[in-house]
Image (tube, rainbow, N blue to C red; front, side):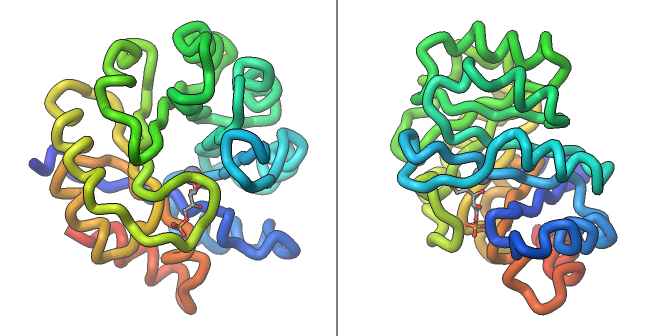
Length: 216
Ligand code: DX5
Ligand code: ZN
């Protein structure tokens, strides 16, 4: 079921060149991406470490594109205010990572950002259903979170088609997305495609964004 007319593209800077991050972000901004996806990892919830609010603050100064911040961290409640204050527009937390889930989602909204909720590929969709009233965006993980460049897991597409009729907010998909794998996610009803390797690994990033946007 294809519900929305426009697909939004959120390039994941995990695959950008961190020594030239501003250049890479300006390039995808110039190519009309709709958001910038920022992967935050704590070495506990996932076996990798990335960036903190100080980097978000730096990015905020060089782009007007909405920042789509994906917190792969345990107990995100401790940090959501810092990430909002640093300039995040969307803050997505993991259903597996926070015991005070509803409170944290409400805090994100109260602090002035849009709230997002994500789930690992093996986590059943029913775990997130009780929280949908407090969620602006659901992020379906199509790889095990932690690293870019992994293969898309087609089994998660059913979560999108199961969720779509129950939820009027935005649905995003993250992991292994390229113009081929994106087709099934778009047909199932996603609004946002997150892509790292397929955009920052491409010779022509503007072409890569166009290819994703027109993948249906
Ligand atoms: C994985 C991250 C993804 C990752 C996607 O934990 O959440 O955002 O950067 O990278 P690709 O598109 O290369 O799978
Ligand atoms: Zn991500």
